[in-house]
Length: 248
Image (cartoon, rainbow, N blue to C red; front, top):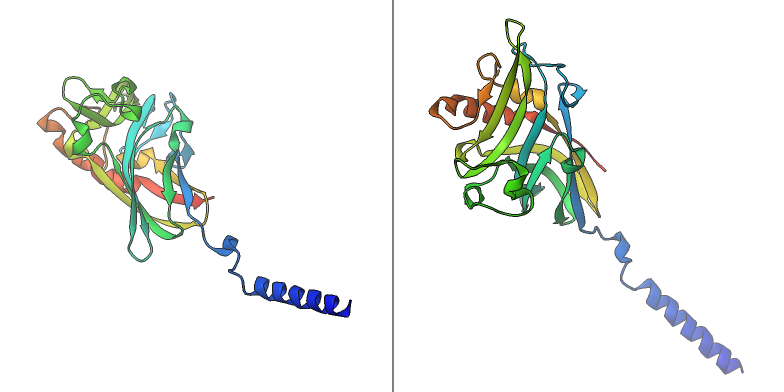
């Protein structure tokens, strides 16, 4: 009987030693995670309100936003240390449908990321291929029938001119020359699923660094040589229009 208890004690001790020397709990190891991006729309310091003549740009134009749509594509997360993770995403954002501003990029490797880059518009390899599916479906109303290619950014609304008259405004930004890459600093630590919140200030698209005066530019559809300067100014301004908010 004593030999039995002695053997049991030895086995218990060995099992305890095995447990102490086992591989650490995997829960302590940072895990990959799905990254969601959520874009909030503001006009200056105000949340976006559709169909309301309430906003003023740097040129002093009082204006409304009755329609706001744009494409985000070619998203890349830049990891501290230099490695990048790219996602093949073509996402159509509709200011009137806040749910379209939240979308998944895909699985991201665990670690720290210090910047994100993405493009406004559709890259040339996909811009001229005709009918496609998903958010690139021509039924979304963002494809020119007269000139094969996508409208990258669309803002339609009204503004008051210098005489106080209410006039329509139409901005349809597109063509390969309008394809715009944006890079912004972020603070992102991936250890499981995360949501990154970004902000787009629509007013900044008409303000910084180039002032776009609706009295001069109120109908631009990217279809003529006269639109070249406006396209260049819009591209410059988009670079300052987005900013990082937080990660949840």
